[in-house]
Image (cartoon, rainbow, N blue to C red; front, side, top):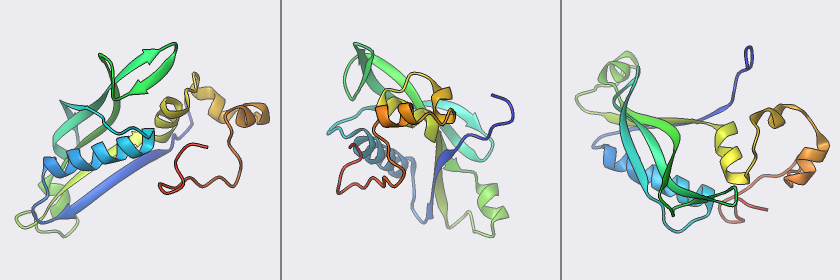
Length: 153
């Protein structure tokens, strides 16, 4: 939809001894917490993003049962985000010594990930300001989900 800026969730970690294994662990833990499942399988596919090298698209194993997404089971794969190791030139441009530090980064559209979690079929519904729609999905203006309280209502 032209002219609209979609919201994103971004992650960045920079330290000594950071690797793709750290990125994989962080994303697995995020997906398990967000979708409230005990086990998840991620697939990393080589891709290209200008600020990371290597770069990867990340898919989750899932199934669609009766129009409902089931994460962590089934034979289907669904792309959820882009990720990679921060390119050394990006670190250098930020005044960080790329010989000593490494980092990983990832990003995903918050609209898309919310659609998957709550089974929302049409992205445009987020922008209609329809109170009936908000009440149907159980959102309230002051809702603040937490890991302790659960991400679902």
